[in-house]
Length: 110
Length: 118
Image (cartoon, rainbow over all chains, first blue to last red; front, side, top):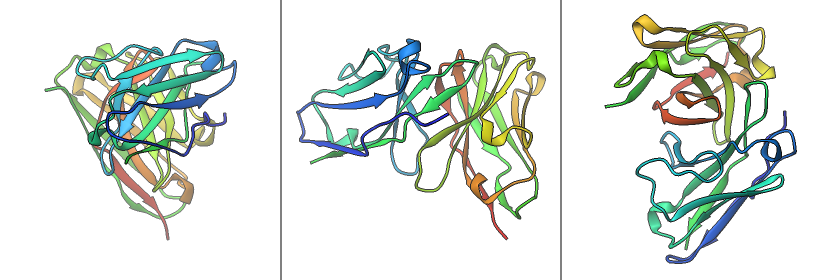
């Protein structure tokens, strides 16, 4: 069970859009529409931002959106704000009631 | 308020044991899959184990099988993680989380730190 692959870091200026990729295999990301994304600020617990590839929980701004193509899922954050600076983790169902997380991406708002 | 509060972390020697607890409030605990996720210092998230609503099914990441046991007490709204034969690589913050089925985690506790060191 290898972790999903994410870029180690991405950056963008306030107001811009950034996209974070998450690459897996046909046994996880590509095999199920069960990708979720988590935001984690330093020293705090993760927060669910997207689930089932593109669904937003109540209270998550619509600036956050998710998509998937083949074995790669993506999180797009539009209209970047300073508060978006955080670590982001993707997660995918991997069958047999198990899940895999990505290695995490540090988002810097310039 | 929907809340999860972990406890039981601490410093333990290699080969030792520790039992983590997670107290749930503000929702019907028995209706949800529950999960433990850990995060080693400066590292990413790692799913550890999950348990079905009635405790009848439990699943683990390969690296902890045979050493770590997840359990729950729905009457006490509590989730547990019994950790035996602990290794240095088990050092992490351990989070309990509520499942959206088994595919996502919508409520997280604040985490409890486990340090395995002599």
